[in-house]
Length: 177
Image (cartoon, rainbow, N blue to C red; front, side, top):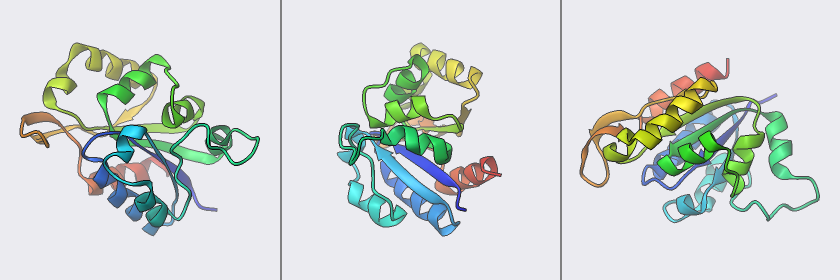
């Protein structure tokens, strides 16, 4: 039986890298289900992830085809949730138990391993509120991959750039062992 991995895609310009990660996980024999926030959909289309994962993409909490809450069923079978890229907004939601869309609701029902791959402006990453939320999540066992230092999309340099896909893939595969 294939390991199911849920990839949560949030609204960072690095969302395009999540498509590559999805493709790489499928090539490694993983069952990948993608959940996208509304902001992520403004950067990368759900059709991209449907094509790469060969699974329906969840974009709307209220568009479930039957009576069973889909996020609960998915949480029962998924071994790992990886939020790639993960914005400051989503880190805050996860740390504070806010469930106001498909991804944040799923994240609160997920009982397996959680991996967060931050991607944001270095000033945002360093902000005390973000760092407080990161500390909360780490205390709950959430694994962080990055961020790394480098140039981000807006032209700033510093820690906040999303880790590269090969490193993320390696860590996810390690977590699934």
